[in-house]
Image 1 (cartoon, rainbow, N blue to C red):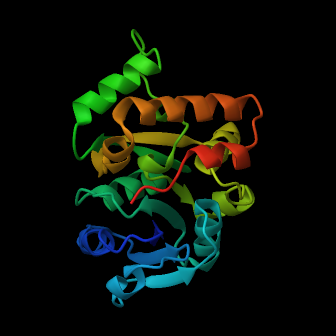
Image 2 (tube, helix red, strand yellow; image 1 turned 90 degrees about the vertical axis):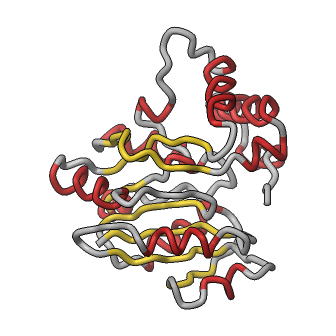
Image 3 (spheres, rainbow, N blue to C red; image 1 turned 180 degrees about the vertical axis):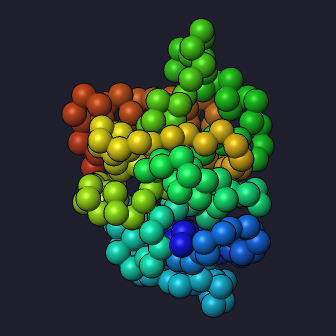
Length: 233
């Protein structure tokens, strides 16, 4: 079984669309859907309307994902954001990777729902990917917008996500890739929202991502870095 864990914090405008999308996904071994809510004050919880199991947590992606993972029944954990959209064969692709290819985890290629070419081009330029167009995910480093999946046994052996306010997915995949086989699935391609780029600004958003990543890598506190990265709704 795949346990699909949706991270929510005031996602009342998006959660119903995602739940409808997830209910339709094809799978072989079965699925459960868990909403890991970080203290929403809007209509998020009422909008779930018995379409998923709800786990309440204090605000923070790492806290929410860890708590939901402990309650999950599946042998594969699939962490998704409320503003994503998934093709019909998404779960089948995960099952193929884990059960047939013996992959321990990974993530997906993605496109943005708006301004995709512009956002990707800015990302390539600002990350200096002129000749080598590989993204972090091509090197086994996954962020939330890659929709990370991982065998629950592996997740537990690693002690879950480090409970920091930012860069928890980067830190987790770095640890996981040292001893386990992580793979980027290039098909299907999932869709992620461009809302942060639109609201905050395309160049500013990409610049923040790069600066936060590089400062984290040299030891800057994630608690300081998180102050630069406000919620966007």
